[in-house]
Image 1: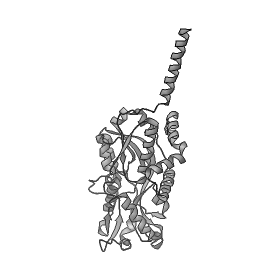
Image 2 (image 1 turned 60 degrees about the vertical axis):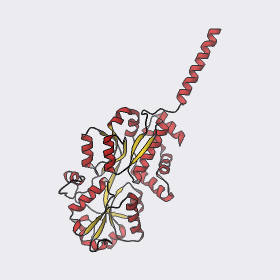
Image 3 (image 1 turned 120 degrees about the vertical axis):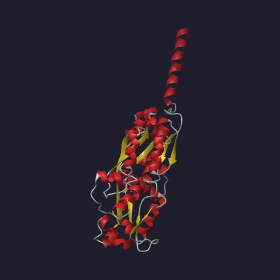
Image 4 (image 1 turned 180 degrees about the horizontal axis):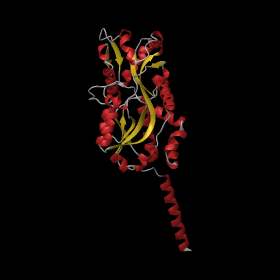
Length: 331
């Protein structure tokens, strides 16, 4: 009888311990915060916050964000200062990305979505000047896009300095010899870039500029994509190189937007990398959530929660069932 009582007690203790272990908070694979690259455009900030929430509540990981431009963040990924880049616009930084991969220090582990870069004019501008269809037509219309700081020239609004798209847009601008008739304007930040475009469109002022999709701004505004010279892989590779000596104009290809990781992090955190490799979102879903955030004045973490509540069937496919259940419980 004493033996049976002792055995029963041990069994009860074992069940209790197992139960406690199963309900315990998950333990992160690494003993420090996971460092995300914090490029300051809407979709990246949204994706980073979605992934951080999942890491915290599904895998027990702390995380932090390292702010910077796409090229500086890629350099940080190679050094190990950054563990994860949620959006690597492969074709925008094609030359730098090739060199980074060859270094053996970074890897692409999945495609988050497919994006597109373009030069745009508002639809009302296209209606006023129906012959303006291509970037090669722009020199004839420089007076319509007058630069207030440089009389006699038009102004082309490029990308914030330090972003990969600033390099490619600047080189296309150079390849088209637009410096003779236009000035190239680099807004200081993504917010300044968006504000300049939004202000011009609200006032029905003619403006020509670089932008990309997915993004709420392109979806909310009635814009026309200007035609570009035919895409050429060799020419475009040079266009993405800051040291390209003789750029030749090329269209932007559709861009695989990659999830990239530092290889030391990849070796130390296989479960986290498995999750991150499965992250895939629909551009239309991103556009809708970012438009909701703009309309409601929501921060990126609030937009991330909105996305996760709206699309549980999408993100739960990235995760094992038990991890998905923990994340759902935290929403």
